[in-house]
Figure 1 (tube, chains in turn cyan, green):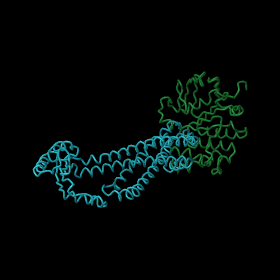
Figure 2 (cartoon, rainbow over the protein chains, first blue to last red):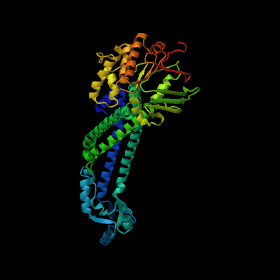
Figure 3 (spheres, each protein chain N blue to C red):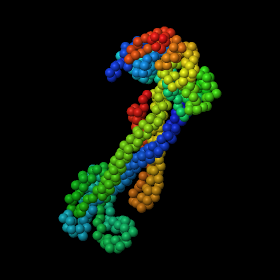
Figure 4 (tube, each protein chain N blue to C red):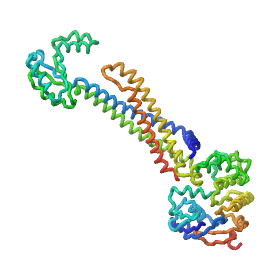
Length: 302
Length: 226
């Protein structure tokens, strides 16, 4: 098999069909870019989860005299109650580590958190902030075990799980990701049909050549290979463009817009972006080769 | 070296009905008969473009019905084909048209550069290698087609009405060429209804009518009474 002959056949085929080729490249690149961003979104969610879940997870707020809940009745937590809660937490097998946050510390954190809104800080009474235990779990999913253990102890105002706050956000991101996947699949179908048609037209416009190839005894592979490679080439060019899209998105959107404004959370790095590239090429080449193959089966007599 | 036995029923009447023909290596055979008599089907069966409904086709000692599909290209490499409508590639030069037949079966460039001018010389087209097919006369185009069919030195040359589009004078030139090829030991099977050519060559004639062999003469003529 002579590579030069095959490559020249492929290039002739792609040029002859230029508009179709461009359409194929555009649709493949858009659908692959969607797949790529869905994959990046997945790693972003994973990254944020591990980052946040790694931080303190369960907060046990203790009673404060301004809280009128049935467990507190407007009385500050007593020394004995505080000790009791601490011992219980330390003895709980699901607990890994316990931090104590005093009113003063809570106030400091509060001031830091709202440094940009001096009005809020000015109008807040430091005494109104509750003291709390921050508990890190051995297994983050064991939240309910710890919560139920200390929930009803005297002096406990409220047990909150930081995951409860973050979960809706992650749900939103996951939903967005699934939506992107669905759009990508629809695009993939359009893509496959386009490639199918392109190869069909190519097979038709080259029927004279393939007819002669058949007569003089060219092997099936030799007749089919230019068509398959034509599809594969269009698919990989599309994948290359999709990789370009992702690089641009990372530079301009993630690094340029998200990261400077949302400093509280980490964002995906280049390793995640580059990690999707092989997948995009794999998807692009598989899809285009498979649909070329089907087109050849249907429309190229060997 | 080649024995052909097949019956081949299609819709209403078989295209070839219990045809039993034996063509020896190196023979020159005319296949005559009116349109639809089964000449082309005969040739297509030899190429394994069609498979017989029943019966067997043997080419070069091989039974085509038991030949697996991936060996068909090898079979076709040993058979050259010429058609009434030449089937040249209009965007390639004469040289490229002939070279194409070798390129697509993976022959090295060196062989192509050596063999193609030889065969163009044989068919009398030396000096016209860089012409495009549409710059040539019909006879010259058919010579290109013959060159392409013969460039790989096939054992068998099938010709389906090669003179059908040519004037009598040009046809004689093509026939001389086919005769010369036949003398190199290549079996030539030619389907035609050009009676003048058949009569002048005095070679074996197989006449088909309605898919049946109605005559098989060695040194025959086209019509019955002639």
